[in-house]
Image: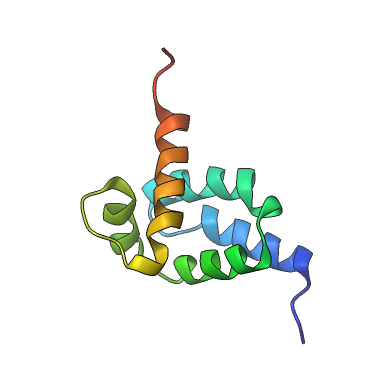
Length: 91
């Protein structure tokens, strides 16, 4: 059975909020809520690949403490910038 577009977004959103570590829940969950619906099928495919990565790898990649794989680098940069903007104190 083929996954519908709506079911795919719901699955990806849930997987973003239920990572296994609270830090990654708070980084990926809000990003997914804000961005998934507007992403192209190709970008969603890449995000699906990212969701398969371990939190112990994702967190240092997003925070800049480790070099991410090249194919995920731009997406991780975007997610990291979103999280930093969202979590930074008001100026």
